[in-house]
Length: 485
Image (cartoon, rainbow, N blue to C red; front, top):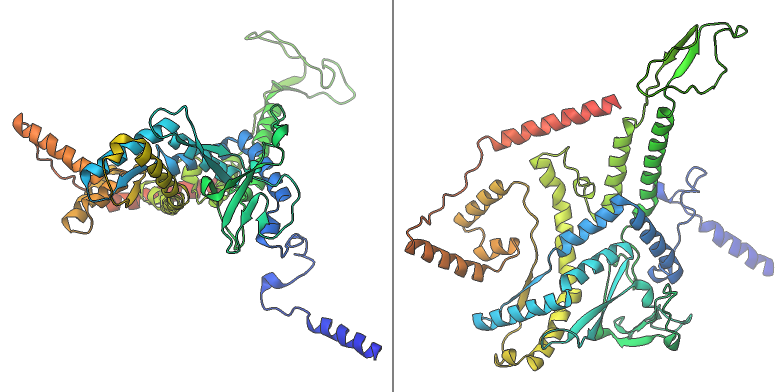
């Protein structure tokens, strides 16, 4: 009986042998090493505190020492946040809207909100997470004392190795998976100002904490650096650069070589091998008999260096949806058409990111500010009740060809395919005050008898043909470079 059971179990294991039709599901001697580290861990276990610490430390180190990576994160923060979001109220009462917008703008400047948001965007890409804590700052000028204090990712953690339901590394959840409390501890890396009186951490309600990270898997509650895939690539770029410089310096270090025509056993008129010869700067010299002076030619950097840098930066930029022209800050190989095409995915990613920030931090922050402002600011208390509908305006990215963009705007407006509000929003402006200001300008120009009619921009003749010609020229340049390499 026992033997029959053992055979049945063995047969069950034999029947579970994988018979798959996918090449990626096959295991062979050629690919087994590549898939050795593949696992079936959950999102929380795959991003456990130990793994996230290693990734954070390495990400910060490489960002601090790699010009390309630092520039990519700075560009990403500048393009996403810019000079900061601007509030546009939509209560239906222009006086109420103007009062709220101006008061909120003054408060944003008082707490330095744009700068803090840019820091949070860099932290989200570099550390994987960005935290901010709502606090009361009595030193702020103005009636509203609301402020936000930025936290690093390792400050939100469990001081002890706690394993309990609905708890993950400093964050407590309800049974629906919503965060309810965050535990903030002193910074583990602060060796000079450790707060030993509060090593157990301080719990804060979730409504007072802003937590931003990119969620790539269901069940993921903490983030990993967005530049994680690039961490294995960017050090190679620095290594190759240093190796190229070292090779060039080595080749350029000898001023020249003396070669002799005498036989190996005849040393008459020659110097010892590998002997250094000193000579006066800008002076004439006489070489030994039967010798010839030859100057070395440095062969570095090679033609493959630029190609290697371009390919690696392009690959590293993909994890941020950033094309080469932006990641490297180099548009020498682009014309108008190719440059605009390369920007499309990047600008879409920026819009998606901004929508995420509006939901996760800006709407919540505005609601917190408005609750306090209506109580603390006497001028706002007089407004009474009003609708709190609103939207956010962001800086626009300058068009690569302003004349073409202006022409397309005129055509869309004339065909009733857009509105002034939509076009002004693309520039990060509120259409109503802009129109009112324009009306004042036209009225003043009319009073001063100045011309007010502006000619509509005209498209350049044969613009499409010129773009096609530029594409052909760039393609030929690229082909010649590849042949030369």
